[in-house]
Structure formats: structure tokens, C-alpha cells
Amino acid sequence: MEALRIYTEKPYCLQGEVTVSGAKNAVLPAIAACLLTEDALELNNVPLVKDVQTMLTLISELGASCALDEKHRTLTLQAKKIKSTEAPYKLVRAMRASILVLGPLLARSGQATVALPGGCAIGTRPVDLHISGLQKLGANLKIEHGYIIAEARRLKGTEIEFEKKTVTGTENLVMAACLARGETVLKNCALEPEVVNLCELLVKMGAKIDGIGEETLRITGSRDLGGAKHRVIPDRIETGTFMVASALTRGDLILKEVEPRHIEAITDKLIIAGSQVEQVSPNIIRVRGSEEIKPQDITTAPYPGFPTDMQAQFMVLMTQANGRSIITETIFDRRFAHANELLRLGASIEIEGDKAIIKGKTSLSGAEVMATDLRASACLVLAGLIATGQTTINDIEHLDRGYERIEEKLRQLGVRIERFISNNNNHRKVEVKS
Image (tube, rainbow, N blue to C red; front, side, top):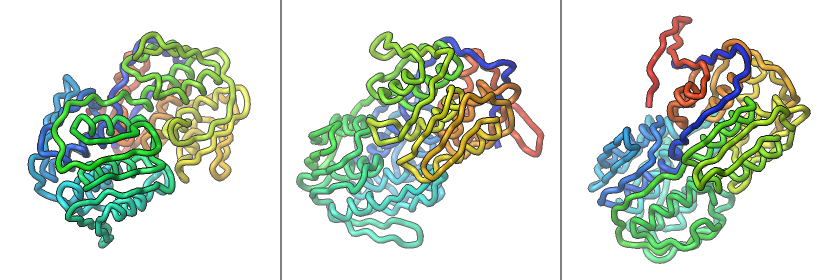
């Protein structure tokens, strides 16, 4: 088991520059989109994170060729022929986003067998909206032995209204509709930038999609799609994580390769907390923390609301605010597991249903903690920056799923941080993995 250790003699004041990586949640559906065509796709600004490797392993098993140029962050994909239409449980359970191959496989091959993702540490994340949507497109689906088994000679366009916002559900059905016969109208679509980025890629591939960035999408199906070159958008959650790091440490950070429009909800909350956020150029922002952090109430919501993926990071920030803050989680039903780990560091947090009540300002002290999910991992790294002594974060495989070499980026900002293998109290340093 790999772990991170942060050494904090006194709270850090981070200063310097950070280049934000491409968005994990944008590149994964883009990789799945290669299954829609026999031509090559070239993706740029690809993040070197574990989830990308997992998705590449999956589409390779389905028959796609993959060539990743790590130096230039370029990924070339080509599914000239689909060799298998089954996404096995061993891969799907490692990453729920694997469900994104369901729509493309079914639309192109007429069949798909995809394992149900199973449980999730952050709450219930059912795929019923994916299934019901594909059934409305004319697919015959059944669930047997933990697998979704779908068949359709060719999908047929129809009108579908999602009961609630679903990012991967929207992405799956948009991809499926691109090869369906006739027009498909999708209503109450997710508005996240990652959905928009996927639609823009599909248009480059020859898809006909109207209403990109709106709640209603109209897709006119085609017989086939072609290849394309596409740039993955910056990761707004990594951006937000480093913004909080600057605010938390009263720092002064320059963040490069960002998209300010995608982080407006995060920016607004940081300004309320007392930080200064300045747009230096179209893709560069400067974040300066203040001596006094102000408390506030935060409610997570689908984009353009405050992202659930930033809830844990702001919880750490609010432990240093002068007063009481309340965070209400409306997206997932079990996403406060990190609160127990923050309590081990000295935070004052009470959980009441979907609300976390944080009482500040409290001093944090280093301790050994356990990462429970991806964003909880980032939250504990942030806490380690202000917790005096040594903070050890175990089970950081979650962190590697979505953050590219975060310890290297922090080390460049002056943080004493190391990665090591923890096994029966025998510690060995390891090199950073991509």
C-alpha cells in the first residue's frame, strides 16, 4: 500500500506556479468515443492518471489500439475493428466510468455486455438512467449475473427526458444517439464542461448535435463517424484544489492552463472566504489567501452550481475559518467519510444527515489517516499542509486516479512531501507513478 507523508514544522505559505493537467472526467468519455469509429482519434492535453490507464486497458481488450506519448500528453486511439463487446467486471469495478463504453459499443456493434459497476464509497450511483435511455432508443436489455446485456440491430432516435441530472448518463446516450437512425432529443441534460467537451469532440468526428451547453440536445444520427484531433479541457477540480491550497496557506499561487469560466462557483466561494482571485490572462489565474478566512454555508449542486468534487477540500478550508460553516451535500448520500479522518487531525465537525457542521478556527496536528475516495485524498493532503508535525495519508491509490503527480507539484512549491510503501510498519520510498 502506497502512502504520502507531509512534514510540517510550521504551516506552509505556498508561493509559485502550478500547471494544471487535463481533466480526468473529460478524457475518459473521449477515450470511449473512439469506439464509435474505425478511424483514428488524437487527444491532446491527456492527464497521466490511473483512471486513464484503466480505461486504455479496457478499450484495448475491446479491440482498440492505443499509443500514449507521455512527454507531449498526446494519445492516439483507433478501434478499426471491435474484437470484443464485453467489458469485464475486473475492470469496471476499478473505475465506474467504464460504463461509458456501453453506449458506443451498442451503437456500433449492435451488442454490448458490460458489468454493473457495483458499490461506491461516496454513495449510491445507479445506472438505471443509462439503461432506461437505451431502451427508449430501441435496445433490448437484460441484467444477468451482474452484467448489462444489450442488443439492438440499430438504435432509433426518440425523445428522452432524464429524471435527474446525470453526467455519465448524458454522455452515454449522446454517444449512442450519434449512430442511431433519425433524431434523438435529450432533455434535462447535464451541463458540466466535460459533457460539452465530449460533444465538441463528437462534432469534430462528424456528429450533428444542436444545443451544446444547453439542457436540451438534438442529435441527428449518422451511419458512421470519422477521426478527429481534440484537446482535453483543463481539470477544474485540480484547479479548485490548488486554489484552496493557496487560500488555506495564505499563499500566492499562479495557476496556468486553466479555464476560468469552468470554476466560477469555486471562485465565488473563495472570494467570500476572503481570498483574492485575479485572471492574469485567458488561461492563467492568481490566487492569494487572506490572513482571516471567513466562514460560509455551501450547498453542492450540478454544474454550474458548486461541485460535489470540491466539497471535501472546502471542508478543510472551513476548519480554519473564524466561525461556524455548514456544507450540505445534495449529490451523493455517503460523501462525508473524510470528516472522520479530519477529526483525527483535530478538526471540529459534526455530521447531521446531509449536512456537515464545521466549527473553526481549530488547530490541526499531524496524524496517520486513511484516504477513502479520490477527493477525500486531496482533502487530507490539504489538511497536511497546515497540520503541525507529520501527516501520513494511507491508501493513496484513490489520489492517483485523478491527480497527476500531485506530490511533485507540491514539492515545487516548497512542501516537504514523500511517497512511500507502507507495509507492516516497514517504509520504503518509491518513485512517482504516472
